Length: 73
Image 1 (cartoon, rainbow, N blue to C red):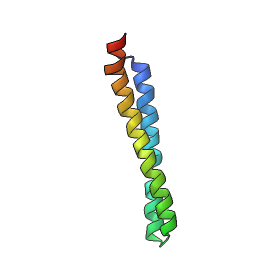
Image 2 (cartoon, one colour):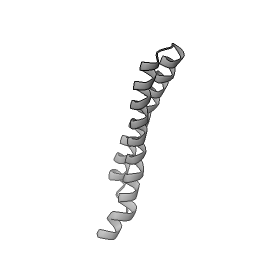
Image 3 (cartoon, rainbow, N blue to C red):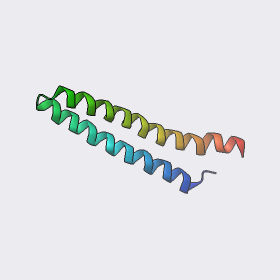
Image 4 (cartoon, rainbow, N blue to C red):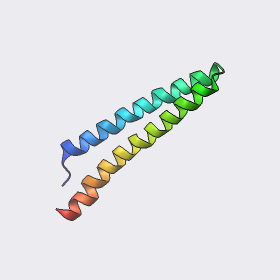
């Protein structure tokens, strides 16, 4: 049985990281629109890495609570 508080915490952290990723990517797009390629590249990279981290937090929390935790306890 999944522990809802633990799973919820992982999902909340992942969603917060995805929101930060969206903000970073939005800033990158604004930078590109203003001919600031350096700004667009930097914030695009930050946004991409935050998006990966957010998805990993959500998927990893779900996987751990529904697969690993069940198999080892």
